[in-house]
Amino acid sequence: MTAARPQTGSQASLPHAPALPVARDVHTYTQFGASFEPWEYTDWIDESMSWKDALYIGDWSPLAKMRVKGRDALKFFAAIAVNSFGRFDVGQAKHIVLCNRAGKIMGEGVLMRLAEDDVLFTSGPGVAWADYQFRKGDYDAEASQIGPRQFILQLQGPHSLFVMEKATGESLRDIAFMRFRDTQIGGIRFKVLRQGMAGEVGYELHGPIEHAQEVFQALMAHGREHGIRRLGGRTKMVNHVEACFPTPSVDYVPALFGDEEKEFAAAYFSANAQANYRNTDGSYEYSDISALYRTPVELGWKKNVKLDHDFIGRAALEPEVADPKRTMVTLVWNADDVADVYGSLFREDTPYRYMEMPRNLLGCVFADAVRKDGRLVGVSTSRCYSYYFRQMLSLCVLDVPLCAPGTEVNVIWGRPGAPQKTIRATVAPAPYKKDNRRADVSRLAPSSI
Image (cartoon, rainbow, N blue to C red; front, side):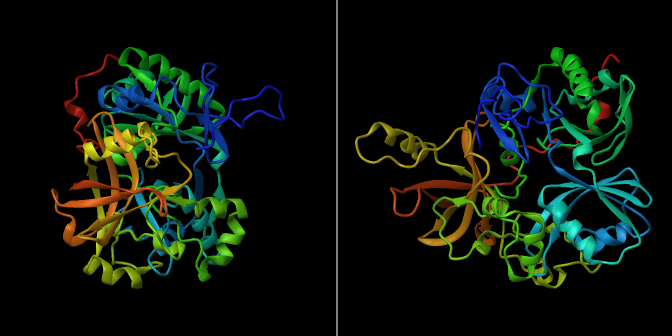
């Protein structure tokens, strides 16, 4: 997290996220991409409950966006993504994963099929890798970077449908999970995708950036009676843990630093950006940054890997799909052991490393060693306090034989060479929170449009 107070004067002003109006009562900001967003609006506990009891509105506009149009648009993505495109309808979206030749993830994101030969890919580092591969290839298509020209707003939570229907003045119950279509608010047309980054019914809006704040204000106005909250940077990653959405530069390092990727990294990332991707902390010790690269199987995306086509990394992934060694689980940390970490702050000896609430700051992969009977069996990331569950949770890439819920392991808390605490943890499913993304919205109470 990069925190700062906005200054007066154009030269010192923060580059504020363009889809959001400035919140005058917020004084601390965090970086997201090249812009800054408020750290919190009300408080992190209130905001973390928003997607359980009502809804939140959040801004993901800083994500990169790549549009590919032409006869070979899908042929191109089939060549670089582990996913199958045997069935991919116009108006459908897919979570796609891109790997290097070694099967390690370069990036992932959402691909929307806008028309027969027209797709939109939204991601972080995945867009850079896709653009690099497109330029290297020979495809009958055109690719363009449209990131700054489009907003991405999200409404997530059990009341999100009601607010969307009131704001648009029409029923949206025909939109199935991971499907999208056009709608409008006040004459402003945009696309609405039903997804669910909080593990609840949710919607993502894609439209022209010059109308972002008008759409935002309309949604806020219609959302007030439903308890809408704005989501700050301090809280937005809590749902990534509860709903299990592993994230680059948080849960793994994109595979930028191998010999085969040197040309790509040099062309697309500055020295500072490369250093940020290598920024790690925690008890997990490694000799090479590749120890924090991950495959789709390790992150729980084995079902995404379809061996019905040739793609970059297929040869490396094929044996792992057949015989996985590690995969993703949730760890529930022992409350007494966690309390002792905080208690050490009130003792005279050197305390254990502080656990930031609700989770570690962004911009770093905090990776902790997970052991069983003294043996390294996994790596824990995204330690996070869930106020909803009243538990400390983390995501964990764990040896498959230990992945049964209820298995007990130990997480080592604290940097090497500093006081370390062995924290007992119990394996639980991932996602940990019940997945309500695909709820039958036709059964929800009708909204008064």
